[in-house]
Length: 130
Image (cartoon, rainbow, N blue to C red; front, side, top):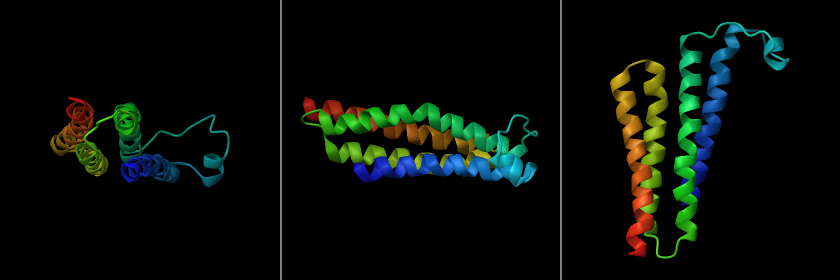
């Protein structure tokens, strides 16, 4: 489980840098490193990367809480919890390029897959305790 928690956090960090990297061409490196009081308008992909990042920020707590609770709650079905974490990770990994592409169908499917991973992790907390 620790590996998958770290993998999701690395994915989150990668999304932060992706968003910044896609924004960099619209401003100079000096502006990017500065106070950024006045920002140029974001392009299509930088805007989408920012929205995908915000979505990751919103969903990260819903991943981390059951993931950490899997270590704490006695009798947790750890195999199911790990499977849920894997499903979440790969769903979120697919979500980013689908969001950048602008095609809403696959993006929604990837989001739903990741959400299902969260449900699996939460279920693992209850199945083992019963």
